[in-house]
Length: 601
Image 1 (cartoon, one colour):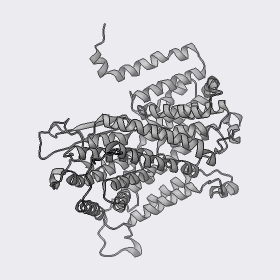
Image 2 (cartoon, rainbow, N blue to C red; image 1 turned 180 degrees about the horizontal axis):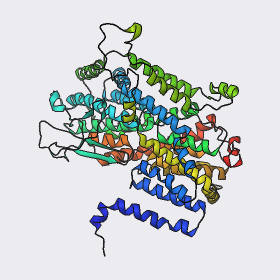
Image 3 (cartoon, helix red, strand yellow; image 1 turned 90 degrees about the vertical axis):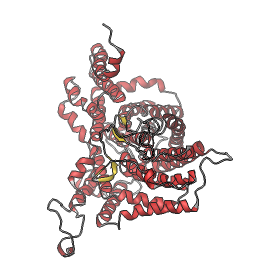
């Protein structure tokens, strides 16, 4: 019986879900050892993650039943790693980020920066990139990009008038962007409606967005003429301006996640892998992470700005593709941004609270164990003989967000002129319903699945076996190994989740480093950062998917720009790890903490 190709295309996920475990079952059957059984589970998870045959968080739950049933780890030992200290730190950071979004503080920051940098196309692009980069260091890359898209589009609509030489009517530049009532900066998932021209769905394994555009001048416009939610570019120069600015936002969101330890999932994976593999501190903490990665992040963002200018505007072209903006248009753009800023009103007590608590959390993270001076956590270790890690200040700030009031309208602050508050309004700085709705719980499970994989590999002896098989790299210069690792990681993360990529690669790189007698950070740190270097494909990251669908840009434009951007960033991280890395970490020697493996304690 021949299975029709059309059926395979339609049901390929079901076929893959069944065939992969059956085909790979030859591994545990041929070598009935705990290491082989653990390798079998990890390979099945890796294929499911890369192909996204199942939702990523669902695949991350496989160790909960597979490890106990295959005799690798007990159920309790598996489940406990799903909520390790690193995950609690991540959850605390996400909750603080939700508070920033909930009070619209991130939008206030974005509009203020754009007002300050200037209104020419190049300077506006600088403003877009700086704002997106900074916000992505602390809040979700997806939320940052989704917030920036309507802001950038409104400004571009004003810029189009300069490029066409005529005054466009504002109503002809309107887009139908349905947003969540709770937060106007967040795009809501909505079902497509057939009567809406230009409807399209942007899909990847991590998100689905329904992006819809209407052109009132041409309601019968075909979907392939302009797919997206942004204003329709009236000519080629406006399309170039649109693609350049939206790619700048996506690149800045991806790069911004590398700037802080909580910026994106892979950063926390490397912290957890080191913490589980060694009992002594590795020297990688919130402060040293920022000391190493913030300069590289800034270099990459600047080079991204320069590369997009060269690609879309040309380096030595005599004729400008984008016309100079007239003073009148600059004033119009400034007035538009000022109007949007005024819509936010004066800064509220809630925003000030969130801002102060946010800065307090960053300072507590930075100075918990700064290495060059005794951190505040050392007092608790000396006094109570307990270890205080980054999750503790994170959860303290989260507790304060629920404890402190959002408005001063009680006790001595109450005034008869104050509006009557609804009984359901708890007047807290953050509401649990908001947290429950906005926290990406799937990422928490995804991180936990990676930690479970690492725990199973260590307990079963798979990690040790891998280390023994990697002897072939002995004698290879570290420069070529780091280059190969970063290139391979950047390519893999184009088609797989960056967190899943880190969960698979980092334990292997740790064993490779030990086998080569080099500091594990020499390989693990650049590989972790390279997990965020996904610029070529729309499905590579949520920011890519958002701008691709929102602007309706051509796939070839994203690939053409992204290939060079990947190469640029890989070169930068290689330069940083070899030249700047030894100044912060003990990369030139085998550090003493590598002897503190858990097997010896």
